[in-house]
Image 1 (cartoon, rainbow over the protein chains, first blue to last red):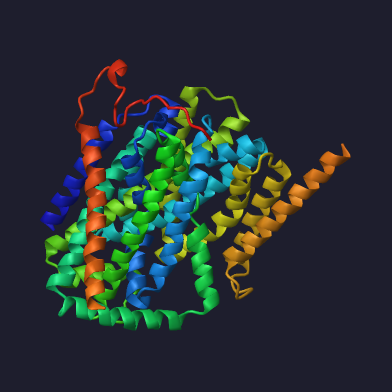
Image 2 (cartoon, chains in turn cyan, blue):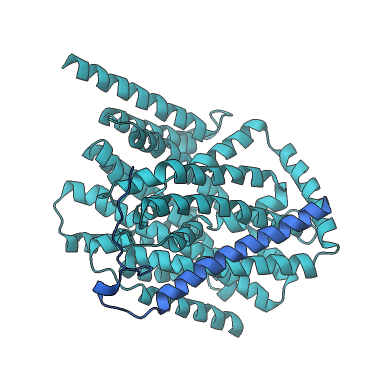
Length: 460
Length: 56
């Protein structure tokens, strides 16, 4: 217990040191985009730390345990998405030199109404994702200190909010880089320890379990379900606010492109390692174990106490780095896409608004954390809403020469409405994955709006 | 099959750790650098860089 507390306190002190070195933001441009002066390595580390949350660590180990390499195939869709965004979208986004957020870019391409709509969706999504992260953080901190879930959530959200509120994006990116360094060294070390010292006939066992788990995984899901998962991973996190902010905050368009491409490539090796850890766990963890508890159970039963505590520190890093990115991105989106288009706010006022929004979002996330289902399911709900609500309008808006505002508005409203209805009102309405249906509705609405706006232009 | 798995494991672990070391070294350089006046911060790793022209 003493070792756990000392380690966690030491970790928080190092985190605090990095946050202090990142300096408090004095201007809004510093809070929102760190003055667009962040180098490739830090943006790459921060991007990876933002997407490697509890879902891509605890969740993927659980999925590897249950279904072997099936989720590695699903994960490849995520890597492809990152690489495609890097090659085609991130440089275009970065070239919009006066934009602070994705909503800002949408407003730049369409009009102010579209920007506000995109802002509302972005803030809602960041709050939803942040609630999932807060819940995961609560589970881990509860494990370390043995405190009640509610206190554990408040503790971790409070620390994250503190440095994100004052340091803005620069503090978020620099602490993310620290957390990335920590978990990319600790997690492989844990994996190697379990594989070499705790698995009898290491590679032979791994080979046997890979085949067994993967065939079980493919048998347990229908092709439609697999397509739905691939669609969710391909589109669900595309250009979510924290990633868009990082694309905008790089020094150059080249750095923006490369950071996304490298992050996509990194995701392949990361998923492979998490899935392998899940497969290695099969002979050691009881079959009926809940997928979110496989990693914790594996390490608890196979490693000395110190190793278990190190894993918990790595997991706290994984979760906090995602949480701070979401809080900052949500706050910047609120200020830039909702407040600034509606009211004239000074630079100082915008900075204050961003800070207040960070604290409010954090409070909302902490309050909503208890309502979150399992980690992966919580993430899938957010994916289902984000992709149809924003992607058609954002991607077509950035690609077309003169996108029409009516198309953007119809697409965002229809996509969000259909996704929410299919997710919460009629969850069993059809076999087809909700994300695909909502995306089709959003695209159809975009085309309708584009044609209608074209007709009215011709009449004039 | 076992050889492929073994080589894959070594490769995956090495790549993950190498990424961490790369980002960590840039971060250490950023947090331990001596603060300089803005006029000399041209090559600053996390300082205020001048945006070069881009041709998009």
